[in-house]
Image (cartoon, rainbow, N blue to C red; front, side, top):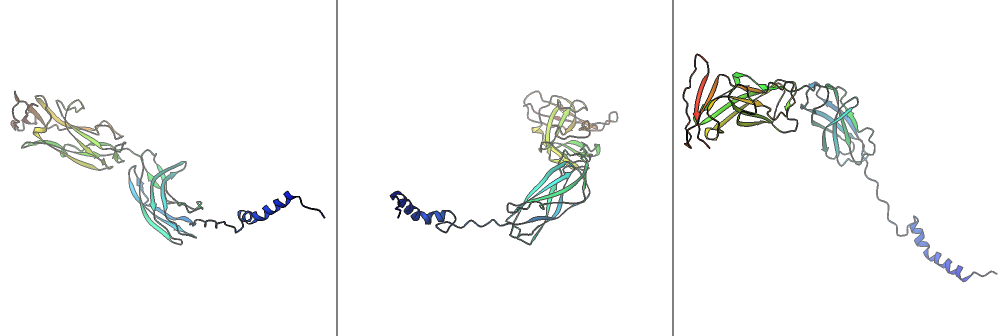
Length: 315
């Protein structure tokens, strides 16, 4: 009979004592926790996309009707709907919205407002919708588009004064008033390229050519002017707030898009001037109080111009 070496006997005892722990650590039941349940899985797909067909210009906005269905098996806790303007080799995002929960077996029908961007060429474009959800592993069916394209004409705006019938100026009591109408005769909305406002600056000029070197009277801001539309502007300034202007005879005019922030088809027609009357400025000799004068107001048969004087205090 063979006898075990004492060291071999001790090793066997250690292995027997450690067996429950080894067993548990290798997948047995000894002290292990259950694996976490798998995340809920939804299956979103775009059921329909329907944009209003027609011809549009950059900056135009319109609604797109959509429907998104969840085929489950689980509920969708919420998803993102992103819209694109597409054509061959062109994919431009135009809007993105967060949508709420969508239960399994249900359809989410909704309308979304999209705005066409600037800088794209004239072409037919498709409205594409893509939906994403963190719990949707199958993204092969997450997109859809309207099969009927829209036509976008890039075009350009064209800002100019709407004509003598709609502009003028007057002295009423102690107020100086100027009015005009700014029209966009182009086929695209007039919007400042930096997203700011369009400036219209009013000047007093010694001649009928209005430039930035003339005497500025006031500045107005216009957010935008739609294609084919106009906006009426009115300036009313208390005479004591009028800028100091040297003695002389002046025409009143304005420069549209003074900061030149609108890219137009015609950049040479942004100035206008009231030609049928002029302003005579007369300063007192000393720091006298402001005294407005409305003299020589009449229609001269020789010049057919209306002259109006006013006096202002020195500052």
